[in-house]
Length: 327
Image (cartoon, rainbow, N blue to C red; front, side):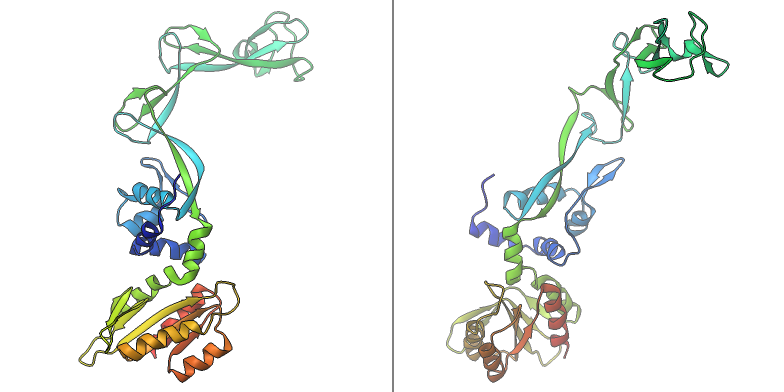
């Protein structure tokens, strides 16, 4: 499966629904996305249905994320759908190979080891005991007196006997009978985040979603990415901009920075943010550093009056940022 280009991936990551799903993975709310079986609809993904607003586009959404390299998948199950109405509400019928009726009686074949007589179990039954019809000896010890030699079926319609019935399907919704050849037979998958997408998430792709929802709930007008025009005429981009409600509209800008070596975030992220806010002059600037900022970066952030948030993971960062913007 060819992977999506960097441009296509960025387009996916900017989708609010994609960000919301990824945030569930990286927050450990969701480890593996497993389908849930619904007797009438078949396998469903309720979490994705909620994100999408309905179930009609769930399959396409997951397929796009798989083809784009955001999700990886494993075969979870197989499912049969009715070819007439696409319902998964089905019965399996074991039918007579002669007349196709499903009115089939299943019996066990019993062999009396000593005399070699073989017949169906009902012919051995006598007053709640197993008794050989040929020699009238009671059979009490399995594998010593007798053993079960297999299965034997009898059709109650045509009265013919056979050992292997023919499986068929019956749709409980439209009452259609159909065979495996006619059935819709599909793969069902479980999904998880790819290592590449997980790395992208750690770089801040999914931090914006819960922050946006939090700020919008508090009346802020939020954009992500957000842009501010500077005094120099340059248009500066921030990971997120938030403008407060009311007459005195105040603008807060937020950037995210993550260490590439899982150690410390370089002070260059502080310098880059300061260069933008010096020209654009927002009312407040926040920088989220995961897992921690370098010592020089801390000093520069204090000097430049940038609110610095250091967090070991995304969840801590989100909680700290919420507390910061609430001040």
